[in-house]
Length: 259
Image (cartoon, rainbow, N blue to C red; front, side):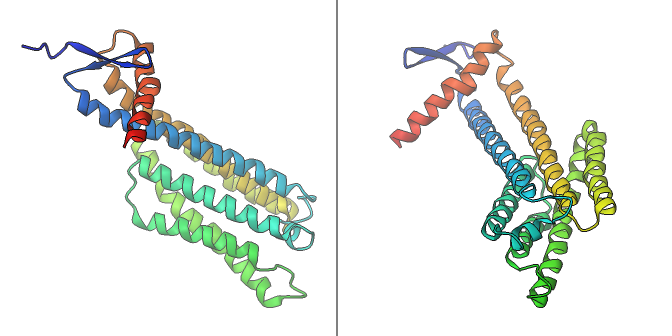
């Protein structure tokens, strides 16, 4: 009779990987999800960091205390760059939020539609010229789509942040503080300098930093929760972690190549 607690070993590039024969198949599913979450976290945070740097770069091409993003894009020779920035930043925010929705199993269907709409309106804002004296019609299209971008972004993020605060009470104060920082900063700079780029720069940059924080925290929580299930029977935590994130990653890659 085979001892259910007996450990078997798979030889992988001259390395031994310990697997509990009792729950190999159950753990395999968890390990696959762990690797997927880890890869998603790296991708999301890389995109958010790139969008943050791109936003700071574009917003400071000209004096942000005098020129809005749209004026930088339309009144100077940066129109194509403005459209690329809007497309990249909008898609990054959209992708990051959708990944967080799925991670937290947030099932509010309208939030997905709202975030898609916000990306559309951000790109539309960058495409519509904001030069009132030359294109009065497109100027108002630009203004309307800009407002709609912020409205739909708030409609998608608001319910999600409320959901996360309810599911993770320890994050409630942090989320509240970050919300005040983002909105309070936008209002403060808008009152100080009026229609200038500094309030846009603050709004986008602080939102991206906030999403970076949420991504780091929520992905880390999920990875820790799943890892605890797998490492309960491990006498050496370092070897257990290595078996998840090093050895099993190699196994899955080899299996994918064979298939």
